[in-house]
Image 1 (cartoon, rainbow, N blue to C red):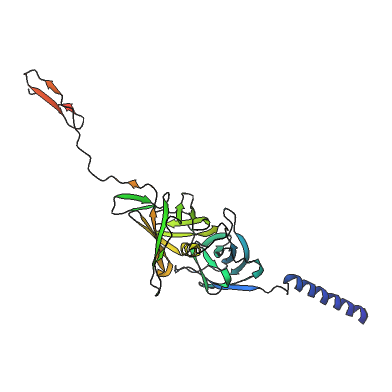
Image 2 (tube, rainbow, N blue to C red):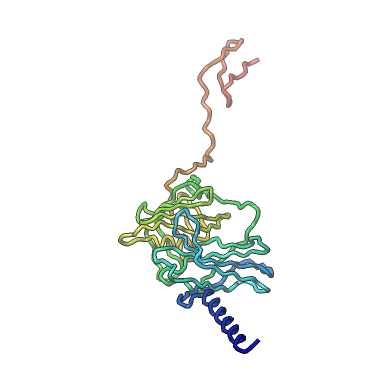
Amino acid sequence: MNKQVLLGIGILILLGAGIFLYSQKNPSVVYASLSGTVMYPERVALADGSVVLVTLQDVSMVDAPALVIASTTITTSGENVPIPYTLSYDPALIKAENTYIVRATISKDGTLVWTSTEAKLVIPNGLYVTDVQINVEQVTTSSTPTNTSETGSTGAEYSLVGPKWTWLHTEPGAVAGDKKIIAPAGEFVLSLDTAKRFTSTTDCNSLSGGYLVNGEVLRIGPIAATKKACMGETLESVYVRDLGLVTSYKIVGSELRLILAKDTGIMVFSSTGVPKVVNDEPPLPIACTMEAKACPDGSYVGRTGPNCEFQACPL
């Protein structure tokens, strides 16, 4: 084979490699990145060969599957949590009015072992793109116990599921400078159903999504919203943000209190549903009719007892 043929083959190989590299990543696209860690609090070792999947999702559409914008997988080989991740995404796919979250799962041999249960809001207007910690919880095969009610001092029992909960205000947390947020009357109404779904109105859009509850632990999200153009001042973004921060709940009387992560506040709701009355008062005494029975000796006896039977005649 002469030198010219070898040179021609070499040129073709180089051209092919260049075309392949160009097709793998278009240099005209300037990719943005989102980074953080996947974490769980339990002191449980992560098995070698576990697959950590992190996804960036658009959850703006109500009653529609989330749109995956980007994803990355990490296969562990001795590492333990926190597991660092970096997601590269095309910023041209991001719309300022949409809602974006990151989620994470950890699987082993195709079986889901850990999953995130909170809506971790990211990206809007370039915010929240670094040090984004995604907390995951261990998946169990047993049924999840649900604490659906607590009895307050009013003697009425309210259930987390069923009533319409109207947002009243959010009490400030431990962060210095935080102020109490007063909700507009009757605008924000939250409902949770037995299918682990929630809906909510706001002062602009409507929200929907899923939730998980275990005892007093509560996680809300992912959260989807309609896309109306909100006019004037609105508390919708604050409300959505805080719903995504809920870690637990407590019902006191007719109030639902959603406790936010890292002592950042408490969302207070009032029930507009009908309470289930717990009747712990003693039963009222039974009043028998004033009838009398004539006895053989000429005396009379009346009715008595729980069944209002006639007393026995004297012997």
